Length: 453
DNA sequence: TTTTGAGTTGTTCGA
DNA sequence: GTCGAACAACTCAAA
Image (cartoon, rainbow, N blue to C red; front, side):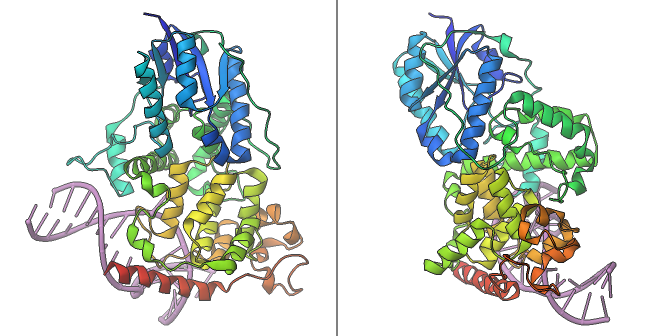
């Protein structure tokens, strides 16, 4: 039997803390498959970030990364055969598409007398592992978080590029050129991920508890794109956080736990990527027709007339990223002020976000819509003015992304319609009356309650 | 089985 | 300006 193996990279584009290397050693071919089924919907920002990260990975493997475009069910067995690999090593994928894809690949490999070996996952604790004493999955975050922490996780794996002796590519290896984008992206690649993480550990993590809610300040970690592509493993981050022992480090650990919780929920309920997790919300009356499309376009383009909402939607376009607090504000506005389906907003986010992660994105949206886990009380409707004044108290965030309002000083920028000089040139009137739409949203939620019986 | 306590992120109103 | 109460009722987790 051949001692050769294949390491098939997917969402784990790194060489440190990479357990698949230990499983595949001593000799393997490094493979990445550009799957048109994933690349299509992933959007220009994520595609470009992916290509750049692949170039970085190829460099750390000294040019040995085999990149092939095609259907993995066809490509992976072909490459495995070309090097006569006994096994193909992967980190397990728990997403709805990945599970089906991997089963198809595995079937063909097994027919050829090879194995698909799953070692680790993109999570500290793999989905499906954290269970109540009776074996059922958790549906509420707080008890999940407790059980997740008790379950614990392995230490980071001690690996680097030299853990495996890399075989030469067997086919022409092509990483596509960057897709043309307007957005400015964070630096890609594993080294950039580690550098960013170190910067956060040395700085903002100390004030994370309060700083994370301020879109006008660099208070968040901005690790989401790196986690999305596995340029760092959460286990590496958790090990660093454990040595901090501060309240803020705990708060950040909780954010990692949310990522794992939502991955677990999506694993339990793959349908929840598209459907209401709580099906009684199917009875929620939604806006529809041409007026709904017009309202949606205004939201997408950041011309709702609510400055904090517009700033967020424009940050999304400019940076392919949005501050988490503002994601909640714009989501609440779409769902509760415009009465549009959460999946419209979720799809728009997935198209533009450089960190777009199916589990976190869809369930973040469902949380706001009230149809998800830990459904927020229906009467909790974000007030876009209050939220702006509270979390962007000087208006700096709004002015940064909404040039029409740059001449407005201080927090008056959150209510431009009330300025003594009138609405600044080029900035729209509020597209809705928030107070009225809030009451409308509450009335619509009554329908859900009524349908529940 | 039954019971009890609790649930990310808020807003409004009135004192 | 600040503060506490009301906003309802349901499901989940655990004892």
